[in-house]
Length: 94
Image (cartoon, rainbow, N blue to C red; front, side, top):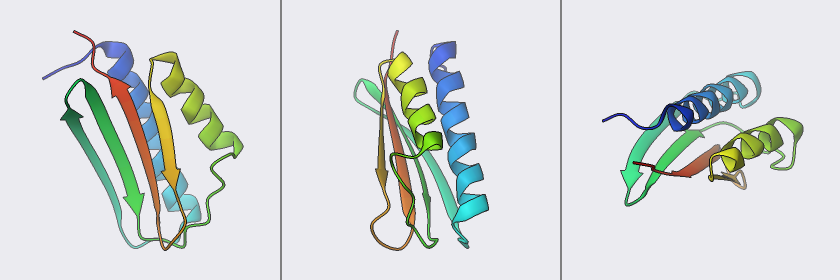
């Protein structure tokens, strides 16, 4: 199905930016992008098997967080071990 254009555009931007960051900085051999509907939310996860070490408070991730907050969403970044996971959650609107 389709969702509100602002949600689709926001998630597309987050996915593109997260993949670009992984390609530029992670030295990964694998990047995965997953999108699924979970109850009343859409969940986007971009993960890689790279070296990790991303700064969750960095400028780029702050920009993603701001975009998500504008549509009622949240950003979570996990980069403690090998690899990095960027998770975006946005409420589905009917």
